[in-house]
Length: 415
Image (cartoon, rainbow, N blue to C red):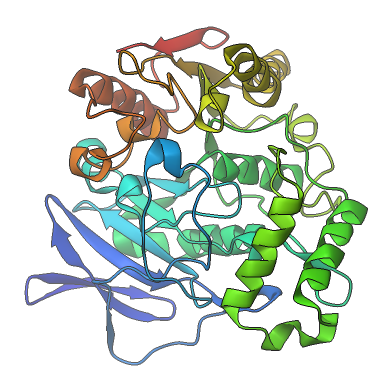
């Protein structure tokens, strides 16, 4: 149920009413809590609130350190805190709109749905779709596995809680819960594949968009994840039972020390755990016979966001981690009676040292020119023709299940 109060829209959710604010042609609701974070525990239900909650400010980001992708995307500073499980909704007027839920990337260690890079206002207005972005727990707070403390994958439990919130509440914002497309980039994309490989996310979305999915990066085995957890405790110099009392800054410092001990590895130390229930040991193989429609693809030079001093190595890593596994998954889906569309993002600014690196397609889907103006990988360029082309394809898939090209072929976005 919605009503107008002082030119702001009030929407009733299961936990209470929220008041959004105008954002161009849409209404935005910022920082809506979808669950309550419990340190090293699964997310819990939000306590109902009295009256109308102002949804004018974004929620805090999950505690995190600087991103290793700063060199390509640029840096950001936002408020952080453990009470970070919130989402944001951009809603056009009317009812029954298809819904796009986006999970950010960042190697399970950085990022936030609140960043201007992922702003959904333009896509919501252009496509007449409801756009949702999500915060989830990161690093050790989201992916530590340690006996007696956490079984791991808490960030995935958060994402499932957010998608469950969408199912139960999005109709009040004008969205159709039966027409939800879940999209993700990098860690967000492999999270969606992981969900589909397990037994907890059934019915929460009907389509998936997978951008730069590191399908060649397998989840940790439970044993390997527990060894990482033991190193984390060793860095802190405490027993497992004391983790609840450690300040966040100290947890992040220990997380950084563990990561430095694994220097040179592409795989982050705190990531998915293939527990065989929530996440399969090989998620791509587990979903290879899925009938869910999927739009998936990569950038041409994925690995250049991490290193670009050896282009043969860039090509090899890009193919091993991203390109090859994505193409093989699409073939399996199409041959098995599913529906998969593949893209490759090839454009990059002339002379860019990053070429068509990891994350370069993001500015052409979400956010605004202003939000992306300082990203080093763009060098001040963001061709509007390519923005229009990408958004037309993504919106076509969200609304009609068809991005506009033939299944089994690869669409190259060259600008």
